[in-house]
Image (cartoon, rainbow, N blue to C red):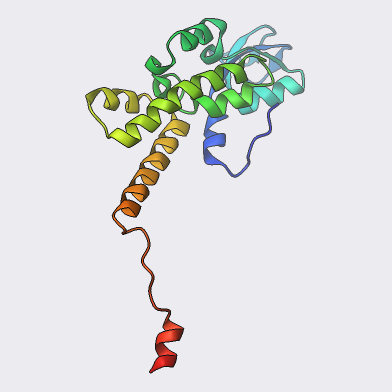
Length: 183
């Protein structure tokens, strides 16, 4: 289990992504939580549970947690083929956070995340520098939450550089203490 940050709302929301699970034992009284109206859920029943719950139940040997379709081998091959064209926001709004949480479960996920991020962050930085056009707008709409934060930081940095070039970034002012003591 990857260490999660209790106070990070994005980490909490990433843990809400559902993962497929297979029940290891029969359970009574949970029929309304699963499919149908039966009061008993039978062994080998398949459920999609939030990751935070599935991870804990997997540790306690109540379920077998499977890899999320977001990080299946097929999906990872698609990401590797064309990372800039992937609509991460539609796939998983917290793609990188969720991937980090699943990193212990699937050893190749950190490699996939790194490659995807390194290729996409260059385009994010380029858009922050050059401004947005129609092509950039499509890409910006595909960004997940981590990339959106990165874009905002890059835009703020670009604005700060522009202010610095105009000598508007910093202005020295006389301290109130100096002004009061001089009169």
